[in-house]
Length: 405
Image (cartoon, rainbow, N blue to C red; front, side):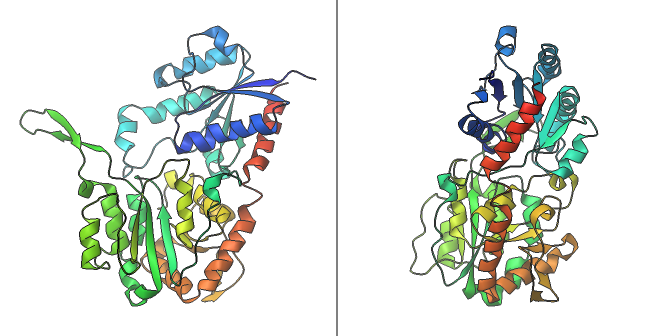
């Protein structure tokens, strides 16, 4: 038997990026291809120990090796000089837009420039889509596309959705999407005449965080816990409830207490707040609704994002209404023509039509819930093989083998 290829994986974190780009793919590589690969995953690689690195044929890292960006270029070059293949993974554009909450932090610390310098010296780069690969090739020609993928047996992707006589729309995400969700602003008020036929789910609600207050006289900075009503999630909730205008007074009072408790009512509420879950169980929220909403603004950061929202919705057999932008154009095909349903697997909204078409397409599905079901089935057929982690890992194994001669 030939010698196993030894792979070191240095994940950037233990949250979503680490799970989908570093940990799950390489655990699957070890499990499915253990006769050819030995994989170690190390969150704290021994950056200064040359013998540590010499154990490996491939070093896979996300954005940077170790946690010190300033030392990363030299470290990558040192690893390369040992004849070890460095593979840098990247799944987000290096410079978030000005409206992104981490933009200022990135610019102040020159992180975007440091990421590009890492790109230039890595042996190879892996990323999520052809759109992003084209941007990365401006700095490194050796790019492989390995999309985000899902293990179809992972428990959080296998919950049953209970039936309902209302069509349920949901959004699931993090705290950096205020300007994306603003594309939905005013949508709920346009659907007020249909309010008894549908409901809304906002998933991922989180009131944790701090704010820094600066004394204008002294310049002194003080950190304090953020108040729930100051969080971006409170702004999201205003979009989903038309500033609480579509919830009854009792429910509004409950929501404005911002307590992680179950709302008790004789009737099913129109709007449902779902609190944040860890990365190991967040996807179970897809079981709560029938149609996934995926609004993103059309700019470079979003155009090169991955299509994970499409993949997740598809594995859950959910219909999706999405922005007609970048990653969502890879697998989705619009399924309305002249107001009539045709082939296709989604409803796509052009940004210039956001003011009308989010509400228009939601209404179309509210009036035709069977079509929402059909769209979900079609989307499942689109993603179930292409984005199966076992299939993508097989591709990864072939790439790694081709690099280690």
